[in-house]
Length: 308
Image (cartoon, rainbow, N blue to C red; front, side, top):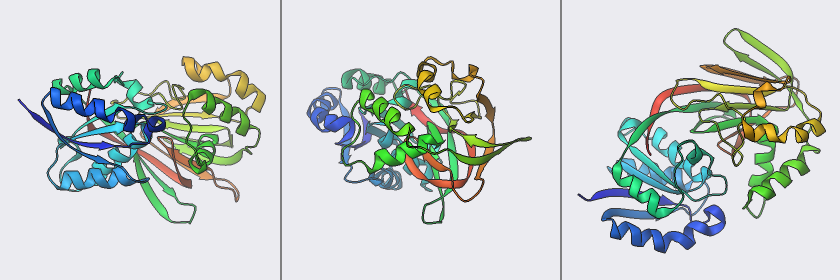
């Protein structure tokens, strides 16, 4: 039986890998009798609009081809549309990006043939989705959904710098080099975190809020995250000497970050972060720079239907 997928592909993902691989993907779709229509994104935010339009036109199977940024935009389109409950839409990703962190949670293959074969099985799970309300740099209140990990303080500072780069980061080695370079230029800002009965005020190196556990090309800043437990994984690191941060880099990847004395990890239903003083704390979600504090985070339980 033929299935029909609305495909949203970012041609520049993975340093242009999507555009290069599309002829092979197209041939495989035809060989597997997968009916489809394809739209290539043309600018930042375009995938969100395409996903919204697709659902309004009756599409119920959406396949994204790209990296974590493309995934973030499509998920926002699915969540923002008002035509049907988001769980009526089957969403799949063929991960061809630099980090592929969201795909790592589900061990989604980046090989097109393997991914499309699994697509035909239509095995699905329901995943939680995060929602952040924040302030833009222009002073307006805005909100964004996130499927993976949101970050504040140094994480968002680095995202802002990378988003402004004329050439995208195309390898993990370059990303690590940039982390090392800019950490010495970053000035910690004071903030206040409120969650449940707790209130913590300090100069934070990083604050992470996770639905899934991987970010930054395989880092586990929220190793306690479970994508369908109805909770947000919260990790925050207080003031740490910058050389100490670099020495602790292996902890970012091996899942032992929470054992550091200056790092706290827990799970919460919601939280609020406010800056103390005049300097706001920056906010990013799924690797996309958004804005700044005040910021409020909440969770929508089992809100996205993911095709494994």
